[in-house]
Image 1 (spheres, protein in one colour):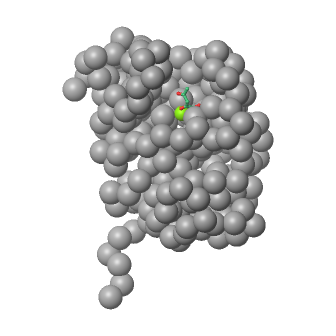
Image 2 (cartoon, protein in one colour; image 1 turned 90 degrees about the horizontal axis):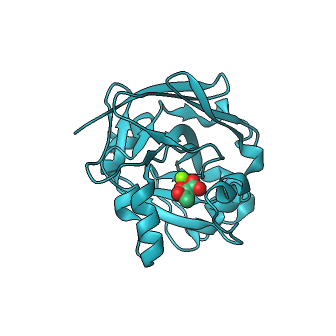
Length: 219
Ligand SMILES: CC(=O)CC(=O)C(=O)O
Ligand SMILES: [Mg+2]
């Protein structure tokens, strides 16, 4: 029987969101983090998804909610231990994503050696754009990503500055975690992360391929 699921609404599938941290040296440096020799991975639950028209909710326990604009890769075909050479065959498409981060909570977790879950995985911590079919992005390593808050440019990065490429990340992740249709990989953020407040308007885009707008609100 044909699946009733539609990959263009991958956020409704309840699949994994696998995030890569510190994939841009300029961002690792701005937060005074070491530049890693291997990808840093963490997860968000599917309840983190939010799409345009709904607000990004400020968690009550943070006073420093940061935006991180990132390229998201939507997996189309299941795979384990995928070789880099065939990694792109597992990609269905892309999305522009935000990795909303309670930076004060993350700093506390880091200081105590605890996981980042409350800093990174809360409801609405993963705003996503519409689905972008793979054909519209011939090379995910050659894209300008930008983000504005209240019309002020905050992040203006380029995926050519990623330390670990999309094929490398797919191969690396699939050595530890089975990648399944509908999973999303967030590929890390360039420099310029900063805080947002209630009522702020966040706009972000990938060149002239996609753009999206979100408001920040209170639960
Ligand atoms: C330090 C971080 O929050 C890592 C991260 O998410 C990134 O995109 O880099
Ligand atoms: Mg991030």
